[in-house]
Length: 168
Image (tube, rainbow, N blue to C red; front, side):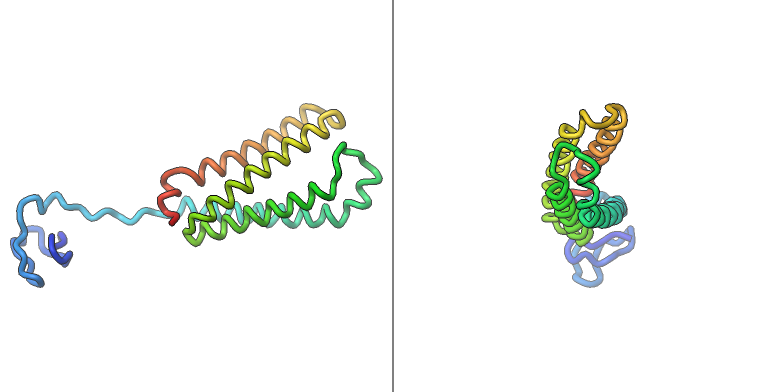
């Protein structure tokens, strides 16, 4: 089956006229191909993973805010805890919003997510520099490196052309 060159009605492979619009089907007809719809499964999986992880991060940030008055008396990390926990919660909500928008195929979601991921990387670097002298260097580098790796990985995966084309 092939579509009519004029109206798009599906015709038999060997049809020379369209029975709907009566248009002659000329040479080159056999080269017309219907492109399959691009799959959005990869984008959906990324969005769902982001929604789950940001939901977990938001809960963790809120729990840290609740317990931070008790924690700040016991540990001096070299930076104020409460502003970092608040910034982390705001970033989690922003990434969550971006992922929900991208799930709805909105391009603004990609921009929101990217800005939030950039801010997340800045906060990670800030807190790492602040606590570097207080904790084991190898543990700090592994935990921060893992966080930075996955943060950058998701930004790159969201910006892949296969996902970018799906967003409008």
